[in-house]
Image (cartoon, rainbow, N blue to C red; front, side, top):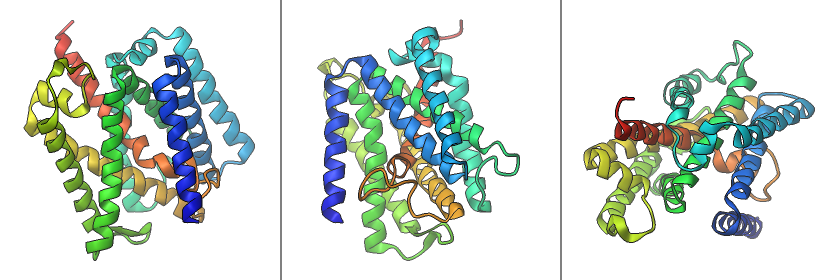
Length: 294
């Protein structure tokens, strides 16, 4: 099992890194869209939709995404790293992940379950995630990697802190393995990452482009950066917990069996789905601040 898990992870990383570094920009954007389409398909399955209907909605996301890349000036600019026009969508996703999702987790129900809007919510949040990934990649590969590191470090630090010190359960009815000590470990890990990123960063003219840490630090200061890192770490925890809730409500262990040893695509990117729209909401606000009033 461990061998299969490691092999799957290595192959996935090779494909993603190769595409990020050498594929044409449009090709990488379409690959990201395909990944989010699969995640949406799995999300809809967790909501109880039949595979045929879930596939149709996921295909609709793909068509909307491709049409947007071809015909929407705002999304073309986002792909170039300028996403201020998408701020309303990012703010809507931020509201969902910062306010609505924690309430849903505390009440043990999925977002939109009472109104029947669950599939629409999933569609909008997946679309927002894809656009946020698009914009992050448009800013630069180093920037994209820096946001991914926030997710990966939080997940890794939470795992090891939980294993070593975990006593108090975070949400035992939803995810028995998660602990408050794991959350504190994730916070400590990402705060240390931010300190290291700022301390070890070279001059802005180094040619590698900004990171999420340097961008926020240079524009609003280190104190705000640490508040941002705390928020994003907690958002990553919420994203993870929310997907665990969906699986618990559906009575399944994984979102699918697509990735041997890892479950489904959504299992691997649940925290990322929450982190990227919230991050790009902040980046887009800073972009508007730089421009000043119209």
